[in-house]
Image (cartoon, rainbow, N blue to C red):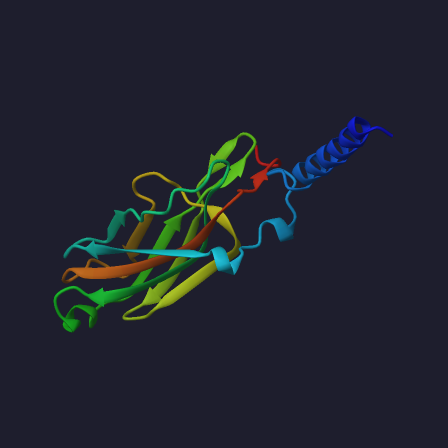
Length: 176
C-alpha cells in the first residue's frame, strides 16, 4: 500500500468517526448523557429586581454570557430570595411570592416559553433546577417576580441567581 493510499484510508476512517459523532449528538437526537450539565462548566449570573410599593409584578433581565456558535446559555438552576430594600421591616408583611426565569422549549415548528419558577413565602430562600438545562429566552425581560398575596407595602428587592452552561439545546420534534 502506498503512503498516499494509507493517508486516504486514515482520512476516510476519521471522516466516518466525525459523521458518527454528529449523528449521535445532533440536537434532535440527544440522549440523557448529551444534555447533562458538566459542573466544571457551570456559570452563575445574578441580578436584583426591585418591587415598587403598590406593585404586584416586576420584570427584568439577567445578563448571560455569550456562548460559542451553535450553543446557547442553558439554564439549570434558579435561586431567589427577597432582601430588604431600605429596612428589614420591609419583609415583615411579605406574603407568598414567585420568581421565574423564562426558558424556551424548542421544537421543529418554533418554540414556547415555559418558566422555571420558584415559590416562596416571606423572607425565604428558594431554588429549583432542571438538570439538563433549557435555553434562556434572550428577550429583554427574561425574569419576573410576582407577589401572590397582594401589593407590596414598601419597596422590596429580590435577588435572583441563575446558573447554567453553554450547550446544545434539545429540539423536540413532537410539538405542533
